[in-house]
Amino acid sequence: MNYLEFLIHLDDDRIVEAIRSAERRTGGEIRVYIAREQAPLPVNAAIEQFHRMGMTDTRERNGVLIFVAPRSQTFAIIGDEGLHRHVGPDYWGQITEQMGARFPDDPTGAIVHAIERTGERLATHFPRRPDDRNELPDRVQRG
Image (cartoon, rainbow, N blue to C red; front, side, top):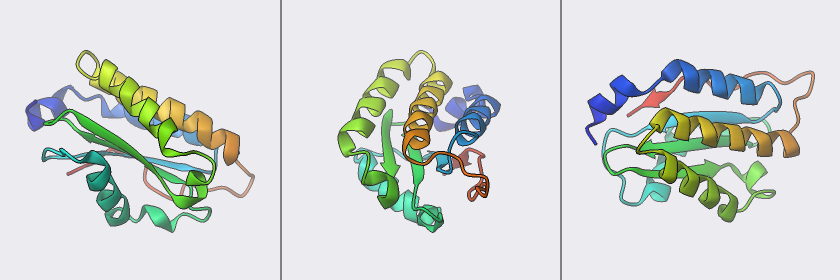
């Protein structure tokens, strides 16, 4: 899939609204990254990008990166160590499988689905507190 064509059809506003909606219920942080290059090993690429984006800097180490490589149609979801204690790789694997099934017909919907499921899990383990603040930008990050 062509990267620029993919970006033209991606609904950033819908994705950002899904992030904001999810984060209203949790102290966790969700980011979405769209890779320019193919990522045949998406988990490795996502881990590298997670660190580049400073996602380990959250107070409770509860950031989540939804990594999308449209050219290779690969995905990964990485949760920081605070969340990883509660959610293992199987949970993220289920969501990425669901993304893969939805992606060809509705890439934005696939990403929004992943955000919603991630937000549900974050709200369970890191409910929003009165002193919570948005620690990371909600915008879609592009490679």
